[in-house]
Image (cartoon, rainbow, N blue to C red):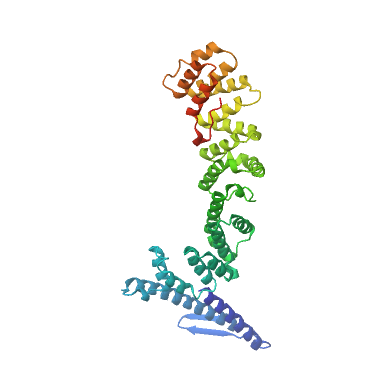
Length: 397
């Protein structure tokens, strides 16, 4: 339809230019039409313009009507063979049946005439079949206009080959690359695909991801999985990796505090393993405890407080009292208060606390520990029983 309008405009301009040349020195002419009681008076220019508008309107009406009736007729036709369908209808059926792999030859034939997509579609099948080198070769031959699509596939291949650094280089380039105008209408889908690739890279090399210049290209799901991988591989981190992690948290601290609770807890566990981030760890822990009481979060905060060179027992006790006012009947708070009383030599008050919560495992631990007295070897064995390494906590109190 756009072509039709364009052709009419072009022809009109040429016709008017020719008419202007022929009319030069003779005027625009005059037209008078009388039919029944209807009269029309205009210059010859007006008549020609009217004729062109009526002709264009008639052409558009015919074009729209033909398409409509063809579509309605198509609905009533009895299709007996697959080959009688339009190629795009055939392709749609293949996609609906999720039969792309089985119909590889057919799909390649459909796109064979496409200078834009033929090499990329072929490369996609080679990639799915595990022939990565052939896929990369075909991507090198792809049309320059399809650069972004070729790059997305190239990155996917690098990740499958565990060439993570190459994938990172290409992803960062795409992140700064201005999107081609013809992809603008599907930019959301394009960005979603890039986000998925960032997620694959982050899970494959969690510490390498910290070197990326882009901070916000992970989905919420991949972000939490990435943090879990950092915790699992924490002992493999270099000094530079830990410095990058600290800088990442400081740069995103305000944003992190607005994220879902589970994500913040993962960050808290990471901060607990970096003594240099003690202040940030405490701020995040107290922020989480204001949302709701989580024994694991409280324990991480409490443990960090007591592991300081000179613990501020008065400050810790005041915080516990504030939490008791907010959250009543919580054995974990009584457990923490017992340690404060013992550390500050208030042994009678500590002994009174041991009578509370007879069925709670933490209070039972304290009763056993109190009975063992100064037998450090037995206390160490007791701690080993209660340690929970799955959650990256060590019973150090």
